[in-house]
Amino acid sequence: GSTAEVHDIYTLCFLTWKDRVFEQLKDRLTKGTIDLIRKERNGEQIDHSLVTGIVQSYVKLGSTNVAKPLDIYVTEYETAFLAETREYYARESSAFISSHGVSDY
Image (cartoon, rainbow, N blue to C red; front, side):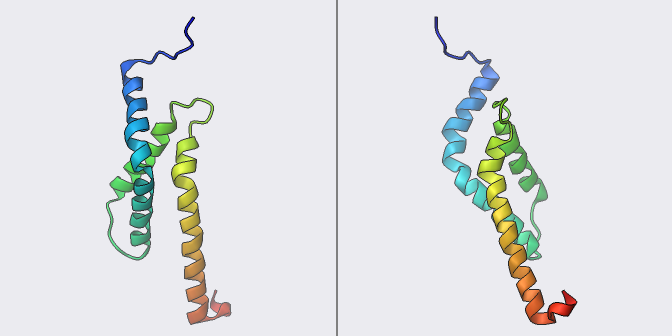
């Protein structure tokens, strides 16, 4: 008896794309998405649908893992996003306190 999994064609294509394409691009994709968010935080206009689509794709890529459906989103995007968010607000609060003083904080 074979223990190999049998997938429908959609799932097979999806898993192949994930393994062959996403694995090669995930670092650049995450960095690019976080760069877009950083630009928006600094007042630049960005394409929100692009960021939304990328984040949704991270969620969708994990959907084949029933036990941990958000694993790819958390490990490949959320961790980096939260680190950048912490750094951003640490810089912003330090700059605000430097220019306004603690009493205005």
